[in-house]
Image (cartoon, rainbow, N blue to C red):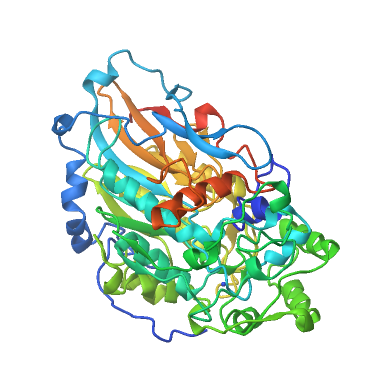
Amino acid sequence: MHRRARRTADSPLDRRTFLAAAGATTAGLGLGLGAGSSPAGAAPADPTPAPQAAASATATATASTTATAEAAPTAAGTTLVSVAAPRGSGGYRRLGDGPGWPRQVRAELAAAGGRREDRRTTLACFVQFTDLHLTDVQHPLRYEFFRSGEPGAWRPHEALTLPGIVSLVERVNKLRRGPVTGSPLSFVVTTGDNGDENAKIEVEWFLTALSGGRIDPQTGDPHHYEGVQNSNLKTFWHPESSVRDQDKQLGYPRIDGYLAAACRAVNSPGLNIPWYSTFGNHDLLSGGCYPAAGSFIADVCVGNRKLQYIPPAEAKWLMAGEADGADPKGKRVESLLKAHSKEMRTVTPDPRRVPLTARQYVAAHLDPRHTGRGPLGHGYTRANLETGNLYYTFPVSEKVIGISIDSTDPGGHYQGSLGTAQLQWLERTLTAHKDQYALVFSHHPSWSMSNMTPDPARPGDKRHGGDEVVALLQRHTNVLAWINGHSHRNRIRPRGSFWEISTASHVDYPQLARVIEVTDNQDGTISLFTTLIESAAPYRTDFHDLSQTGLASLYRELAFNAPGSDTSLAGQPADRNTELLLRRR
């Protein structure tokens, strides 16, 4: 999505909740090519994982099928034990340690046997990250100007996405095992919107955060912040000045040194397990909506002019057009930028902000510098680079195959769909793996796949919506779950023969990821255990602590207090920590 979780059909609209569901050149982009976790051409005859890919995940994948006596299960470090909770009252509320969320057993698709916990064996144990939205807050085209029309159209905390994701990485590294089975975590899979503005620098931050290394969030002028938080516009929170902005009027604090700290380099240990990458609309489209590479928008991205404010009526009109998909090519935005050219702020241009094509996105993943714990390419292979297709298979365990699909519509608009070629590939892949269980990963959930905008590169390739994908998955009884994000909301739905699991983001509150454990209960049923986790940052914040850890804590608290935020993104108890039962085929 964009800004904040773009709201689903059952929620009221703002740009960030609407757009959160809801963009040249390759200079300096390494093309370290090699075998990844599986082939994924436009129509591969054999979707079986490549031998090298299987080898890269052998140790961890095999571990999930071995006896779980190696370690006793524990809920420590998960939301089963505690969840961040507000303290006191008033406009701006501090966070502290709150009660955990209990596990809910969901038996809509199969009855719960009385002795299943004594018999079960582990089939898979992994973590889902989604909607990280790592953000270059000084980028010339950030769409912050929509905030004049809706308070939720800009995140006051988005300068801290990098300390936030590093703290989430630290949580997974400390967790190490599944809280139900005690089996080692085998891998992490991201389900899209890894960056926010489809900028080359954001992709590099994402790859470094998960693979390990030093990340410098300072873009443009290497010595000065050039964004809306020192613009003197009362529309935005100014943490270091006396400007009586609209956020301070709601209780947001003054924090001297905040911007310098937010622009300071952070260090990531990288995940200590392999990880895989799935593509989201913000990983291709400017603002999550508009084709960017090679367009007028791309020129703005690497330019020296930044629009920070437009009148509320214009903002509301443009947001309404985005919600309706009225301007998938971004022509209205282009006209807007040209009309307001004399009102723009001059900033320092940075070529690292160039938007990437799908192939360039794959090439960045194939750079050996970003291998981390592997596999090289994190699911993407040379076949993906050659075809431009961003879907593939990967080994989860001996009995389970992972299938990552690309639900982003290259034609524009924040909602998703699949082209015919990919839909047919998915059908063939599930058939070829009929003797294995299948887990399907995508960015968009079924209810956000209604975008029929033609792909400019494949104008004859018909687009297909969520209902068709659900129907296809229901025809294959080996499918256990469809796991996705995009809505920034916890939501779990039974789909007749499988479960659809959508997880909240790590940019809007509550900032979460999800551990998923799959077990064979040896009684004719399968269980999928879902357990939400927060970052490792302490709940309690200190406005004087601007260390990397202190900023990660502040990231969570600022997100909780963000004006216009959707307070329902945590979902209902049955959407959070669960046991989801299925009949075993």
